[in-house]
Amino acid sequence: MVEKLLSDDEARAVLKRILALYPDAKGELQWDSKFHLLCAVVMSAQTTDKMVNRVMPSFSRKFPTPESLATAPIEEIEHEIKTIGLYRSKAKHLKATAEILVDQYHSKIPRDKKKLMTLPGVGEKTANVVLAEGYGIPAIAVDTHVSRISKKFHIVDQKATPHEVEKRLEAILPKKEWIKTHHAMILFGRYTMPARAKGDPYSYLDMQN
DNA sequence: ATCCCGAGGG
DNA sequence: CCCTCTGGAT
Image 1 (cartoon, rainbow, N blue to C red):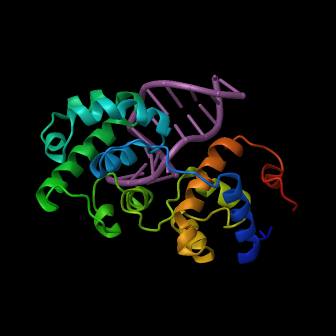
Image 2: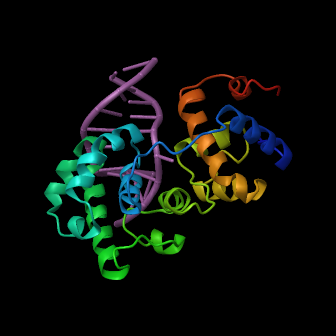
């Protein structure tokens, strides 16, 4: 069967309504430096940010700088983040990323999407979060919520990749709206229309179909 | 396509 | 018990 996608205007109307529900949405990850922001976002894969926030204070004290993380024993890093899941690969990626930051970037966090994406554990979604949250650079990070919401409302095809979702959203929204719409979609997906939500998606928008 | 993986909610 | 959580590497 053929899937009917929303027009640009229809998609904008849905997104505008989501934004109206969460006009002041912001990222909920807690961080005190761009380095710790990067670490927190790497950790947040397939994990709630509540769990990440729970380990970040101790993590940040133990590993205040890229140098301290790069030289730490892998077991020590694993121990700090064990409760967030996927901890072995995340610990390995975090240490390797810290080593690259020290060796190639003077321990600074690159302000560049392609450079960010060369870091172990950093893909397009993570890079976009760091750019948007850390540097205020317009970007739409496509996570499970953004992807799910975009598909439920047929803003994109059901088999669209995260990259395709990102390009579609960026094409229909003015850059000024990218970051706040992204945040609104996250909170809408987390609190209003979670993965187990059933029935007509528009009923969650309080909007006529 | 498969693996990584603990914690929380239903 | 089963599903999901601001994914990325192989």
